[in-house]
Image (cartoon, rainbow, N blue to C red; front, top):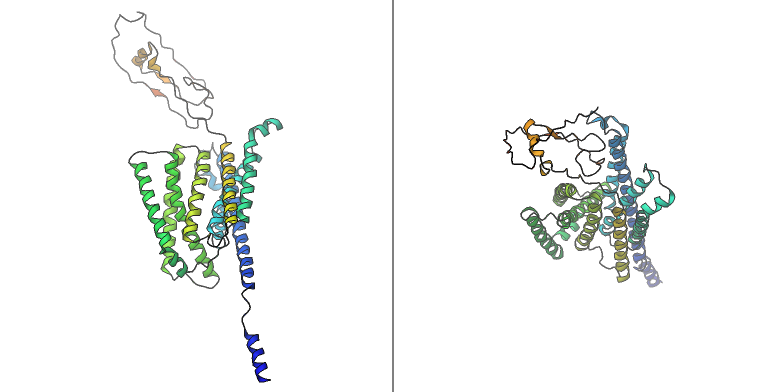
Length: 406
């Protein structure tokens, strides 16, 4: 009797079977993936709305004499608040979902900007002309949404607590050290060609941005994860690795913004958006797979479907940005001294090119409505010249003064 009672007591004290544990862990990982994905989508949507609000405010105050008049408007401050809220949502999303899931969701911002731009467009189009003009945007939005769905559905489900010990272990692992060595060599080579050889190709600049961005997102996930654990009661702020990651996050973000600013001065913003998204997402996913081992334990089907989702999202973003209206570049003026007899105008120091304030600019090859800068008149220097009588015609040219009506 005692033996049977002891056996029953031992059976009661046995831990639960491990067969239910994977299901519980899998359900928990899907829940965390969903929370992270929703936070990222919400954050990108809000940031896109905020940027468009601030852009709308700047356009309305374009003719104001006060360069800081937007500080006095509620619209600009609402945009700033929404931007901070959106960035906070994106930052928090890294603490819940794998890096490989959060990074490609940047396509949501491109989709939102395209839709907002179409809704608030001021031009009136016939339905047929409207569809012809924006068909690429609609197709791109559809592809980007399909790609986003595949990304969320087939994203890796590997979750690990972002403790100081785990991050330190990943930081000194051989795969990541080898990856860092390759990335540093590639970054130095690209920087050498960019600075010393004047290799201003957009791929070179955006590769520099993407390499820095991969380190930014790796450190952002570490910092966000340690902060969330600290808020939950498991304090991680006493680990030195937290401050190392924080400094790396800020430094790489600053240099990344500097290279992006240089790229925006040389290339169209839509081209930067599409190429930058593709390069940054690809390299960031690679960094997450090496540092956080995102795809460990995933089957081949999930990895292939995830890669397909990335490719579809890339194509969608490319089509959306390809359809954006490009700014008309400034047309060069006709060289006046290339015309016979125009050298005689130097004698009186006359203004050859009037200031550009009208819709049509004299001397330009075509209309320049989109030129925002106001160009001052260029006065030619007074030169004392003796013109020989052996010219094509002995009669001097008559200078006609142009008086501009206000």
